[in-house]
Image (cartoon, rainbow, N blue to C red; front, side, top):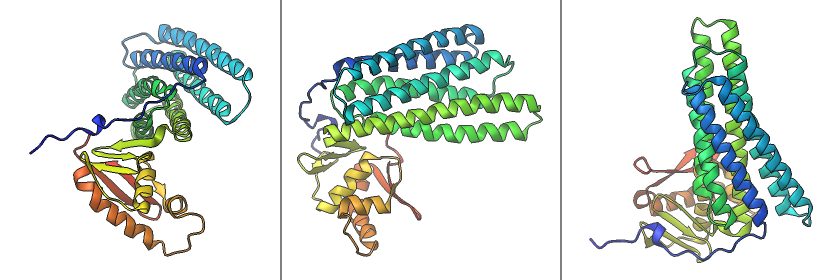
Length: 319
C-alpha cells in the first residue's frame, strides 16, 4: 500500500496578519491570565494550595484582566467603528466574564470555609482549566486568520461536559444526607463554575465568526476529511472525493459546527437558499449520499438528531 500524505500535509494558502495587532496582543495576554487563574483554582480545588492564598492570587489576576480589558476598549476607541471592532468588544467582554467567574468561585471557596471538596466541583475545575488552555492556544491562529475551529470544537465539547457535571453535582448533593448549608454552598460554587464554561462557549462562537468572515475558515478538517473552500475540494483519507454542490455546502456547514446540532431549517436555508419550497426529504437524501462518501474512510459520523437536524462527530476510534 502506498503511503498517503496526512490531511495536515495538504498545503494551505498563506495568511496575512490582522491590522488589529495591538488588540490581538492584549487578547493573548488576557487569555494567558485566564489560564493562570484556572491553574490556581484547580490547585485549590485539589487541595494543593490553601483556599485563601489561591483566592488572593486569582483576585490579583482578575484585576489585571480588568486593566487589559480597559486597554482593549481604549485602543478600539482610537479606530473607526465597525463590525470587527464590535466583535473585539464582545470577545473582550466574554473573556472578562470568564476571569470574573473563576475569581468568584475562588472567593466562595475561601469565604464559605469549605472543609471537604465535592468531587464534581474538582471535575468542573479541571474543565475550566482545560478551557483556559484552549483559549490561550486559540488567539494566535485567530490573529493570523487561520483555522481556529479545532479549538472552538474543544471549547464546545468541554462546555457540554460542564453541563453534565453540574447535573451530577446537584444529584449528588440531594441524594446524600447533606445539610442544607452544604447544599447551598456547593450548589453556588458549582453553578458559578458551570456559568464560566458557558462564557467560554460564547467566546468560541465569536472566534468562529471572526474566522469565517475573514476567510480563515476556507480549510476545515475533521478526522480524515478535509474541505478546501477556495478550491471547492473535498479530500477523504488524502484522496479527492467528488461531491455535488449541495453535498459540499452541507459538509462545510456541518464541519464548521462539528459536535453541534445544525437545525434542518438552517441547512436548507444556507445550502438551498431562502426560496426553497421543496420536500424536506431532499435534505435527508443528500445527507445519505454524503454519508456514503465520507463516513467510513473519513473517520467521521453524520448523526441525525430526531426532530432537530444533523450533527457531525468524529468516529468512535478517532481522537
